[in-house]
Image (tube, rainbow, N blue to C red; front, side, top):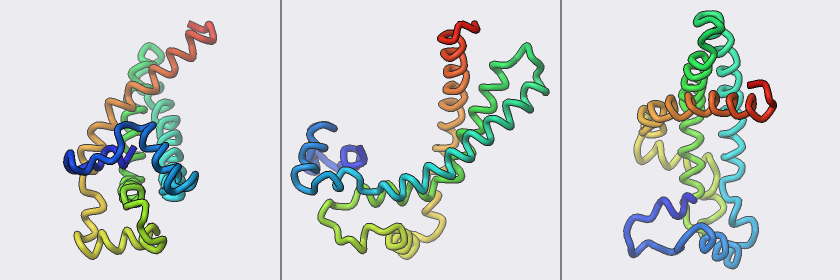
Length: 164
């Protein structure tokens, strides 16, 4: 996915679509070529999910006390939006590093693929603040997206379980 998103011009087009990319990467670099950035993805997901679900549960409970039982959806929307925004704020630099690793040429040297080397390169060329470039819009986008996800999940779950 990163390879398809990082094309700079029509001349940079290497893959026609996701399936073509997977087929070509498998052919040239084997199964492990598909999993470049897996470690950094895991390092992003673990604290991200802890912040996301932990914050959601706490805020939803507090929201129910604050808004009352007549406004359970409002509590879920606010808790989901805040939880999503907070989780991105926590993991944003790790996500940036993961994306840089995944965007490197498949022929990149192994020592270029470490999180440490990516951070060192970013900080040397652009400074520490660049690890957070784009965080504002990401957090802004995360609020409505995650504010919709949880109530939708809860509604769907209630309908499927026959409790609604």
